Amino acid sequence: MDYRWLAPFSSPFSYRQFAQFRGVACPPTPAPCAGYALSGTAPGATSTTAAFAQPAVFQANALLSQNFSFYGQDTWKITPRLTLTYGLRWDINPALKGKNSANDPFTVIGLSDPATMLLAPRGTPLYKTTYGNVAPRLGLAYQFSGIQNWGAVLRAGFGIFYDLGSGSLGGVSSNFPYQANKINGPAPFPLSPQDAAPPALTTNPPVQNILVAEPNLKLPRTYQWNIAVEQSLGSSQSLSVTYIGALGRDLLRVTNLFNPNPNFQFISVTSNTATSDYNALQIKFQRRLSHGLQALASYTFSHSIDIASTDAVASYPNTPTSIANPNIDRGNSDFDIRHSFTAGVTYDLPSPEFNQFARAAFGGWSVDIFVLARSAPPVDVVGALYFAAGTAFMPRPNVVPGVPLEFFGSQHPGGKIFNKAAFTVPPQGQQGDFGRNVLRGFGATQVDLAVQRQFHITERLGLRFRGEFFNIFNHPNFGSPINTLSSPLFGHSTQMLASFLGSGGANGGFNPLYQIGGPRSIQLALKLQS
Image 1 (cartoon, rainbow, N blue to C red):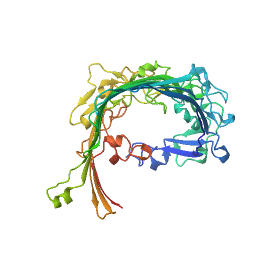
Image 2 (spheres, rainbow, N blue to C red; image 1 turned 135 degrees about the horizontal axis):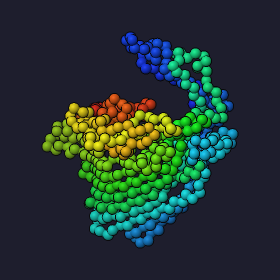
Image 3 (cartoon, one colour; image 1 turned 90 degrees about the vertical axis):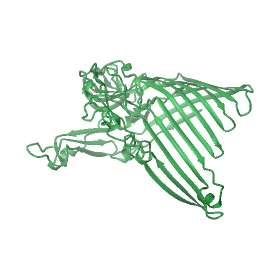
Image 4 (spheres, rainbow, N blue to C red; image 1 turned 60 degrees about the vertical axis):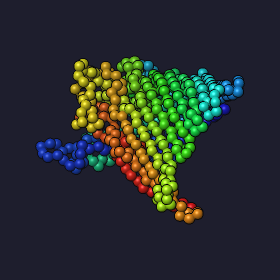
């Protein structure tokens, strides 16, 4: 049995301001100067307050999460070559709530009709707890007969897996009624005491921002299965071929409502309207260290399809159910990579034996090589953010028949751009006829190399030299093109892959020099060891 009681604490701001300007210096006359920083006028300024001005309230927004899991399994060795493992799991995950009833998060009544939706009494659960989340598991292993070091093993498995079901609902502690915004614009900057005064916190409508869930929300689940055959190739090598499948059902999907009625300004709704399908063929070759050589290489041919690729945050490209059936968003997953190959090889170079000087100069070296090659990820073409008719989303465009979607040529970054003339903006309140994640960005290829040697200075003291060459051939890898039609750079790649993946800090990711897709970089190291 597993019981989890999670009650995280947070220490957010109690007050802050945000001001946005069109630029720093005023443009040449006769252009208007208002809105530029040196003019002293901000076109938009926001003051935000949260319910944390007094230390006694710090726990007011802390959520309580409880999870109950019961699991049992057994292993049955049917024959010396056949083993069966089977088990059963039962998950109970109540909805998130406050640490005490007075601080439970708010939800709504009448979500099915946003025009008449009302704020529910405090204490109303975000969704009903479900109790039928029973998940069987089954695994099988069979060893084929064969000569020594040339045997084969068959493995297969099936299981049902349930997720927690909360998704982005963890953000309820940073929205209504714990936060309020007041927008001033245009306004003199610095803000006057009146404009800078924090907005009042209240538990009564109108509601600025709120996260809610469908009252009958279910735990998302996946059905997963695999079958693999592993063949030994002598005493040190093996080759395996695996098929993997997974079906996701009742997955979480977040859509946005904008001004659905006078009581609400912005609502993020979590529902079970997403599904996913994944199939993959995986081939792996492995050689354990033998005669100074070890290697691991793998290739994956896969396809992932879903309606929504994340439940972590509200996703504007998701089509609200008030406009169309969620299946209109079904397409390639955001992370769908059809082909992926990686290989790592380590080789201890043989020491020359023809004379003592050559052995001292060239002996003891080893080489590490890493190769990565993958096909292009998908790109979802969308229009500008749209607020109207009770919805907030970024619709996909309509396609102009007979017009090429892409242009190719060495004059374009990465060798291609998307053709903006191939798309038109759909009428307001409609989703375009262009599918989700149809176009592709750019593939990636990189080879890294490292050489090292151990020098023995004394019996107990040694010196290790290592040189590492990342992207040794300096192969250019480009980030995905800009996907927003309203951007003047639509369809163009504006970053190398390493920067596109993130540059550390607030943008996430690693330093571009230390992740895939960066320029060639070299680092040398000496390490004294005793």
